[in-house]
Structures are given as C-alpha cells and as structure tokens.
Amino acid sequence: MGRNDEHLRSAARMMRAKAPIQFRIAVATLFVAALALSTLGLFGCRVAQDAKRQFAMNPALHVILVNSVSLEGQELPRHVDWQDRERIQQTLDQSFPNAGARAWNVYQINFGITDSEGYTDWVESVDRDATALLGLAQMRNDTAYTPSSKASRLMLYVPAVRQTRGGYESDRRTPMAFSRVERLSRQAPLVTLASAWDAESLNGRPLFVSYDTYRTILARAFGQPFPDLIRALARGRDLGIEPIACVAVYVPHLADVDQVASILTAHHDNVAYALGVFQQLSSTWRNGARLAVGFIAVMLMATCLSAWLAFRGDLRRSRTDLGILRHFGFSFREVARIYHLRFQRTFLVCAGVTAVYTLVAGALLFRLPAYVCVALACVGAGFVGLVSMALARAARKTAVIQLSHLLRFSKEME
Image (cartoon, rainbow, N blue to C red; front, side, top):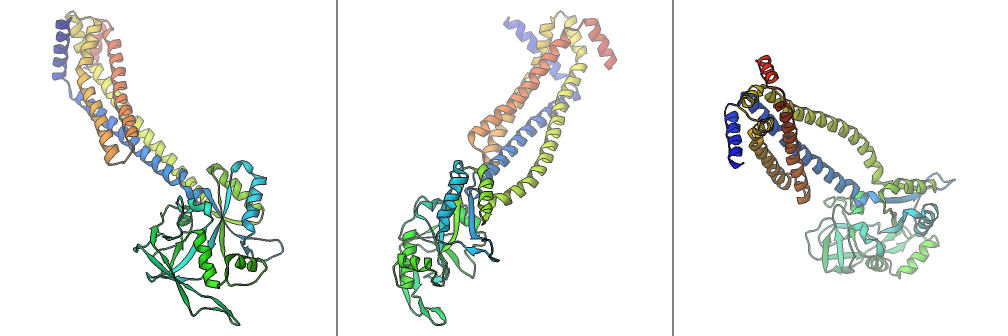
C-alpha cells in the first residue's frame, strides 16, 4: 500500500511539473481570495469593535441632561432648582419604572475662582452616589478633578462674597488647599456631553470637587452654613447664584433612552442627550455601511468565484492527463487521488499563509483580541479547505467519466 501511494505521489509530481499557466493563475487567484477574505474580516471586526466601544459601550449615551423647565404661561423657561431632581425621579418611577432610571444633581458655583496654577476655575460637583458621571468610583475631599492639569497639588482662592446695594462683591479671598489633583477622562459622561469645556480656554476650566467640598466652598464664600444658604434660596432670596447646573438622568439600558427623554419632554423638561445626535449620524452611517458591505460582498464573491472557476478550468484541461492515467491502469479513485495530491501542497501552503497573515495582521495592525484573530484565521484556513474539498469532489466526478469521453472532451478543449 505504501509503494502504491508513492507511485500516486510520483504521478502527481509529474502532473504538477507540467502544469500549464492556467493552473498557476488559479493558484494566484486562490491566494488573493484567501488574503482578501482575511483582510475584509479583520477590517469588519475592527469597525464593529470601534462601534461597540464608541456607541454601545459609551456611557455618555446613557445620560440625559435636564437644564431647564418650560412652564405653561411663562414665555421663558426657568432654570432647574432643588426640587426638580426629586420631581423628575418620581415622574420616571411612575411613568416608566422598568427603565430603572436614576436622577442626580450636577452642582455648580457660577462665578470663577482663581487657583495657584493661574486658571479661573468653574467649580462643579455631583451627588455622592453619582461619581460614575465623572468616570470615578469615588471622590476624595482633598482632591480636585479636572480634564487637564500639570500640577500635583492645587490651591483655590475662594472669594468672600458680601451683599451690597449694587449687588455682590468680594475684596478678600480664603485659600483652600487640595493635596492631590487627578485628571478626568475625556470619555467620562459629563466631560463628553459638555463639549464646550476646554482645558486651555481663556475663560477657565471645569474643576470638579466632592459634594462635601462643594458645600464647604459655598459656605466659605457666603460666610454661612450650607443648609442656611439652601433655605434662603428656597424662600426666593437672590444670592446671585444658581447652585444646580442641571439634573442628570442615567438610563441603564440604551434602548430606553429615547422613551425616557420623551417622558421628560412631555412633563415640560428641556432635555439634551447625545443619543439623538448619534442616531442621526448612525442613520447616515448605516446607509453608507450597507452600500459598502454590499460592494465588499460582491467583490469577495467575485474573487472566490474566480478562484473556483480557475481551478475548474484547469480540471477540464487536465482530462487528457486523467485519461492517460486511466489508460495505464489506474482506477478512477487513484486518478482522483493523484489529481488531489497535485494541488494538496499548494492548498496547505495557502491555508498556512492565510492563518499566519491573519494572526499577525490582526494583532499588530488591527489591534484585535487574540480570540478574534484565531477565529478569523480558522475561517480563512477553512475557506481554503472548502475550496480544496470542492475541487477534490469535482475531480472524483471527472475521474469516473468513461475513458473515451475523457479523450473526446480533451480533443474538444484542444
């Protein structure tokens, strides 16, 4: 049996040595198709991963900001106040409890405070359990948080505000030290949504502090305890500040964001959220993506079909050789085996090159996870194996044709 197999391999080498130019073209077409399939797969996975990271996994898309309330009978909307967070939370709990939406206050001190770095800071804060809006697990009282800072420590000079007949003024400042400065991620929801914030702006920069520190700063600025300030604001006293910057509503499930926004709008809340803009962009992107995917699919099918047709053409031209082998006493199974051995090494090399290219390009060029690279390498090698199996089956069907028909077909090809 071993010697017979060696005879088959020897006959296959002879056929391979006299392979016409069409066979080499078919091999080249196969390599191009396999590498094209691998490249398109890598590119598609890279695009899908980027879309998932920037869209589906973007925490900013889960946040809705309520900046003002439009009341009936009033021409201009009023700014959000201390009672709005609780009202908004109750509205959502009653209208859409399954959404699990949470409402938090975003606080502000709407006058600039200079610091030791030479910036004018717009101090802001969030509720104690809303630090995720800043991409943080917790906020320390001795730490200042900003999108941009070169310092490791910071000193704020809090103005002592006093009321005069002409309004409010300050001629004295109280230093307030922060032993640490941490940078906020540009992907944090509040930083992403407030696109106007610019760390290098001449108008200053946002500086976030913990809620307790925020209360302390306001108490120092106005010279009275924070609860007294809030009671004064609730009674309608004008202190020249609007402590609530906005109410941030976090919606856990992205599919519920639009409905939650609609509920808030129906209750006269003026909302702003990034998902609406993304949806307009994604609609345009989807139309372009469909055209791109359709074009890529057509090109890929054309390339694969070209490889298959090239090998089928070579098989038709090889009928003379198959007929000669049959004439010398080889059975149709042996003839099919010889033809398969003729291109087996080529297909193995192609599968190996495709797998290695996919792994290397996926890891180094496309920066994909290892499991994605391995899966695409298997797909590319599997494609080559599928073409090999289809061609081997076609060879078996050709080998069983009667010898007279093989020779007649060969003369017709000539």
